[in-house]
Length: 291
Image 1 (spheres, one colour):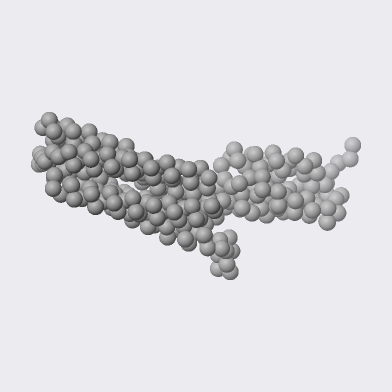
Image 2 (cartoon, one colour; image 1 turned 135 degrees about the horizontal axis):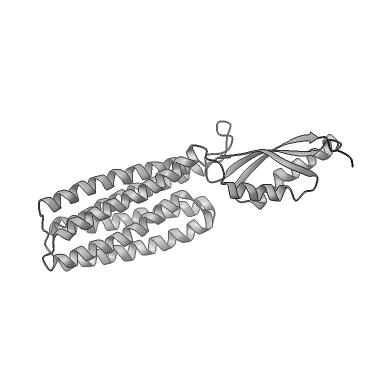
């Protein structure tokens, strides 16, 4: 299954799973007045939005290059992951405010084993979705899938916190409900900031990391006809990069032979390094002193 088809399924499964969770969480939280479960329900509602953004972003990113977008639409992944991160921060702020208010007002909830069942169903559902997303992300390294994977993992861990607060409520320790609601919001903020920064770096055309550049240079210099590599720059076009560089070759080589070297690099580097989509090589003939 290709990269975009796999990501599309991640979005669809996320929507289905989260719609199911939102219905049962909101229903039980309204009856029980549990702030932690209500926070969890709001988070799941936000997850539906995130899953929709994943599907739309993936659809746009899968569009082939055209006259207006010569290098494709790959950055759509990062634009939509940025939108997801901002929405996560908005939801987290709302949950945090509501949770603090519940602690101050000493709001209590009605303990019910339905609360426990809902928490268990959420943990199981999110664990399945997390494992699926992790498998897809390992295969395709798609930031939209990564955002979904982190979201499912966070939900699974944080719902476990909600479960603890529910069980403590059975013993009259209701203030933990607001505390865990606050913890949930802070954790969502942390995840949202991480996704925001990763997306922002790509959209601001951050360069390929130094270690990977050095690996490419070492690969190029295996050809003894290439004396050095200069002006090595990379530009992000989504999850891959365009590499632009200059190679120094013996000035005594004829134009045809020197360009054969460049052409071979432009074909071989994208095959050798998965993060490179396209290579543009400029040939610089230099004088070689004869010994």
